[in-house]
Length: 154
Image (cartoon, rainbow, N blue to C red; front, side):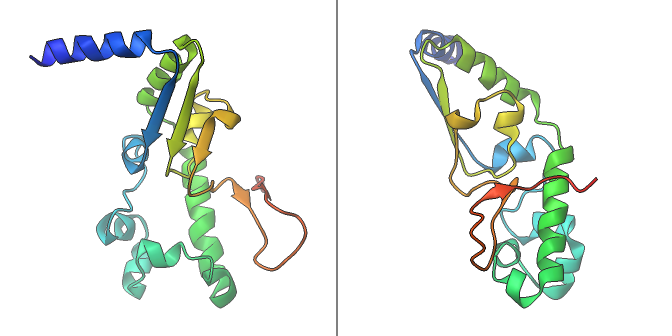
């Protein structure tokens, strides 16, 4: 029975005029990124936050940039570098190849902020990151710069 379902799924994908991919944390976890669905994965990746009793949802709050800028920059800087160093797993490439074959292409809707769909070859304008992207910054106070790329400081 599973072979029949897989074959049918492959036929549907191959005959699709366009594709919509939706993805969340599982895509990043399969690339080796920490799972932030609960404190254990986060606290393993950030033991200092475990000692402080801070959960991921709390650490990710932009209010830290006002309250404790060093903590905020340490958290986001580490995550940004982690996401830059992590190579998207092969599943991203498979989806990109499927997208290339679809006559009208594909669109990605993801809660991930890591930019891995773009690294795998998806055009920027075909990816909607509903939680934003860690690869872009904006001022906490009004600075009239809007959103700008998080450049490298090499």
